[in-house]
Amino acid sequence: MTRPLPNKLRRHLQRLQAGLPVALVTGGVHGYETSGVQGALLFAREHAAAYAGRINLLVVPCVSPWGYERIHRWNPDAVDPNRSFRQPSPARESAALMELVAPLRGRFLLHVDLHETTDSDESEFRPALAARDGKPFEPGHIPDGFYVVDDSANPQPQFQQAVIGAVAKVTHIAPADADGRIIGSPVLAPGVIAYPLVELGLCAGITGAPYVTTTEVYPDSPRATPEQCNAAQVAAIRGALDYVLAQPQA
Image (tube, rainbow, N blue to C red; front, side, top):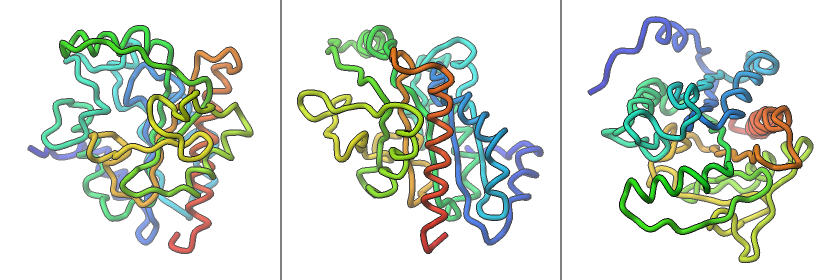
């Protein structure tokens, strides 16, 4: 069931410039991934104005505020919002974001979804997921560095490399493991893996935009500070915007 948007949001969407494409930036789908929230806010505060008149920006810095407040991956119903972007959604947070962007489908040029891969993924949340679902826990490997996730149904390798190139000026890029993988997925280019975003119900699949990327910062690295992690997210957003705006269709 679709609910009407709050008046404040409706007025904001009505102010979007006709004739310009829309870029969506999302953070905090997993609330405990701090640099996604802080990076989105930092971009909005310090850099968004530079794109005025070129593209409409819609920034949703904290999709899962309950998780952000409690430093948690899931929502209060023990549901992962980032596997819940489908209809009907089991996560209220995911459903609310889909309702927000629905009137703009067909206008999106870009979606950057900001995430982190943390040590607590391996030490806390993956074991908890296995326990919740009654499955054995299989240990994995947390990569040290930044990487992105492309859409395997619509790969954009040059775009992803532009994002990686922008971030590499700020922090280090995650290397492949001994099997040529990052978190179990084949590395397609330095710092790039791919998932079927829509099929998996992931946030980056909700807009139908031709250019989408999911960023993954590693905040537990001894080689990175919280400020670098926030700056890496900002660099990813700016690198993505600069790339798509340089393309003929923009």
